[in-house]
Amino acid sequence: MRFQLNFKSGKPVYLQVVDQVKSAAASGAVRAGESLPSIRPLAEELRVNRNTVAKAYAELESQGVIETVAGKGCFVRATSSPFKKTVRVERLTQGIDDAVTQAHHLMVGKTDFLRLAEERFDAFDHQRARAEKG
Amino acid sequence: MTPMTPETPVIEIDTLVRRFGRADAVDGLTLRVEPGRCYGFFGRNGAGKTTTIKCLLNLLRPTSGTVKVFGLDPARREVAVKSRVAYVPDSVAFYPWMTVRDTLDYFASFRQRWNQQTERALLDQFRLDVGQKTSHLSKGQRTQLALVTAICAEPELLVLDEPTSGLDPIVRREFIQTIIGAYQEGSPGQRTVFVSTHLIAEFEGLIDQFTIIERGRGVLTLDADAARDRYQKIYARFSEDPGALDLTGTRVLRHQGREIEVVVNGNAADVMARLQARSPETLTAESLTLEEIFVATLQPGGVAV
Image 1 (cartoon, each protein chain N blue to C red):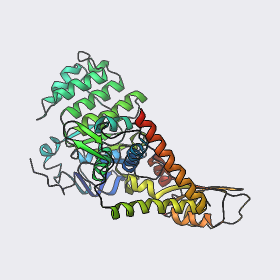
Image 2 (cartoon, one colour):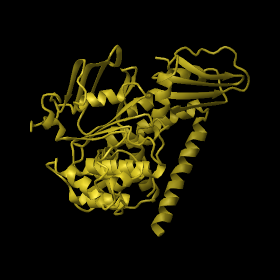
Image 3 (cartoon, rainbow over the protein chains, first blue to last red):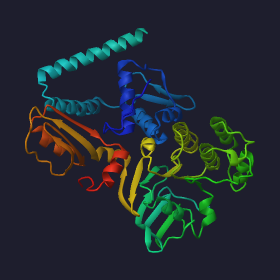
Image 4 (tube, each protein chain N blue to C red):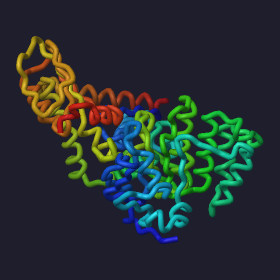
């Protein structure tokens, strides 16, 4: 998978890596069982501190997105979450709140917002279905 | 060797002063570097970076204040400190009659550890000819050789003083990749880097904490992510000249007709809300890079604090 870091985004660098892996897994760009690059080559390629990549992978592991197999590397897990549904809903709520805030400032109303959410859902489903067909 | 508890900072500088005649090269600098961090030490030429580093390595004695490395005084415990540190200075001098091979053996003879595998890998990567006399090496090759001598010793602390100035872009890239790869890989979390530079952009991804030094004093110390979160550039464009705007707490870069661009320090949300209230056509914010933060901090007038 490909990473694109942006130091001007205001988002911590390790979180950019976390979000990009999660997004790639959601869209099927990486599939369950596929491996991620190991820490050293990825850090070298992105020219970031090794600790930054290690921190991102640790975070992905704690969220149940990837698993580390000793001596083999990091693998994307089949969609499952170690958290209870209430925790998962709570986390998602934070993301939605951010999006609703943005929508308010960009003057996008509720109807348009919900339509867009539906479109994006379909787009991800579509991409994932295509990726699975290969 | 004194065992180091995880709490002991690798570097601890407390109100360091170093005077040359009447001039204070370093004038009350305080900073600490935790183990495993990559710490940037940013300053203009003559800001006091090299003097500070020389005090760390006991090449200069402080006029006052204290310097500790691994919790030890580098003047009293010189061997204990130096055996765990490697240093790449800005201009590297080797004995001109020695070959690359002789030089590596000479450096290795002072070291308790010497990783032969790393040595082979790096010589290969840098395409250094071991039979070459060091007097025949280019500036880039001398820096590469210095980096090999530093990394093969597997030091807990790697001190780099303006390591990439005067090097071509390819050598610079390889230099930084070597620090990320060969050096940091060895003992993750325990390999500390202290790098002084004014070429900040190329170290952007590597730095996790930094101090900006000016006229011998620390003017800003922050985590890199926190700094990029605090310092932002906000741009707004209105459909027509908005007239007077409340821009207190910002540094105005541009205020011309319908457009405005300001730098904020920690108050982005507040300033965004104030501008939003005036219904701009466009309103965006982006973080400053570490180099832009450096420039903004040292510019006359400075950033709004």
